[in-house]
Each structure stands twice: as structure tokens, then as C-alpha cells.
Image (cartoon, rainbow, N blue to C red; front, side):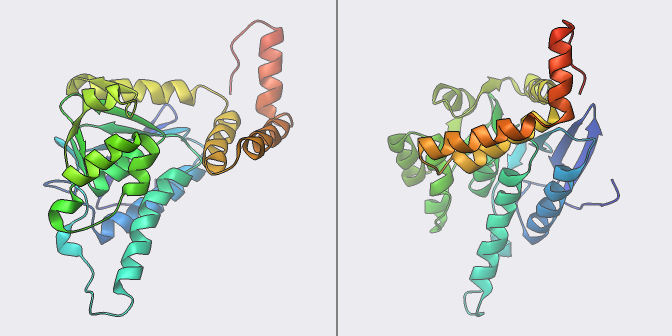
Length: 255
């Protein structure tokens, strides 16, 4: 990779990119973080040697949220709209990345850190980790839309109104996390899922992620119609032809 980053480290092996937030002491999200994460995920989305991404935090914290020392000045015209746009794009780039992104939540994921975990495709948590939306404690607002995508309505409101912490095991019980394990087992489990995805047809995985993204706000009939268009597109690809040959020859396909 030619780009260098101050807020992240990136390692690529076996078609899996491991992205680690490296902003000590608490991996707080500042202006540099938002600029770099957008550039980074746009790059990973187009790299042929990357098929799946694991996002985690250095140390014992995933991300403590927005850096409160990096708030816009309300007296400056346009400061808040510009700040809000940058914050949104820092999340949108993960959601819109054509490669699946697995959140490996190694520790506290608070506020914007919680949202960052929830915009990933799959959430894997350490038992010791937790999700929390503490905006009400700081007289701030935000994140409700993302919380609602994952939590039931009562749990979402409880979490936001009280700033209560949701542990890895609680998130697993609530169907917010797919896996919750002791911290030393969590990252290997996330990487294992990523490698499993990376072994699949890249074209089919991209189409599946695009379908999740596009159909979320569509009525059932329109959503399924879009998915069928992706099936038709995939039928023209080399991956499709390899899958058909492998099936006929009773072997695993090679993508």
C-alpha cells in the first residue's frame, strides 16, 4: 500500500485486510481519523488483493468515540454542517465499501465508536468489550438511526436514554453481535470469518453486499427484483462459469 496513515495500521494477508485504529490513548475519532478512514476504505474497496476487511482497535479500547477536543465552533458559519458531513462520510465509507467489513470489537465502543462498529457488516465482540451511547451525558445527540438498525425499539431507547453499557454477551443475546468470546479469542475468530468470506467468489460477495445496502430501504417486491438483477449480472462472470465447472467436476471452485 502506498498511502500512509497516522490513525490506522493496515496489514493484508490471504485476501484479508486487518485495519487497526491507532490513536492512543483511547482511539478517539478526530478530523484526521475521518479523513483517513474515508480514503482508506475507498482504497481497500478497489484493491484486488483484498476481499474482506477486519476493523479493530489497538490496545484495550475499540474507539471511545468522537474527540471532544475536536468539536466545531458554533460561531463559525458552516462549521457544524461541514463537521456533520465529515462524520457521516466516516461511517458511510464503511457501509458503502464493496468488501464485507467485520468489526472486531476488542474493548469499549462508545458513541461514534459504537456507531462505527454497527456500520460494519458483521459484529464480533470480546466478552470484556461493550457498546454504549453516552451522548446524553455530554448534552449531545446522534446515532439513533444506527442504533435502531440493530436493537429492538425498547432496547434502543433504553440504551440511548440511559447511556447504559451493553456487554459482548448482552449484545450476543440481543442479536446485535454474531459472536462474543474472551478477548484473546475474539480477533482470531473475526479473522477466521474474514478468511471464510475471502474464499468465496469475490463477484458474488460484492453482489450480496450491494443487495444488503440497496434493499434495506426498499419494499419487499422491489428489493427482491433488485436481487434478481444481481443474479442475472453474475451469470455473465468468470466466477459463475468456474462455479458451474467445479460443481460438474465435483471439486471446490477456485476464485
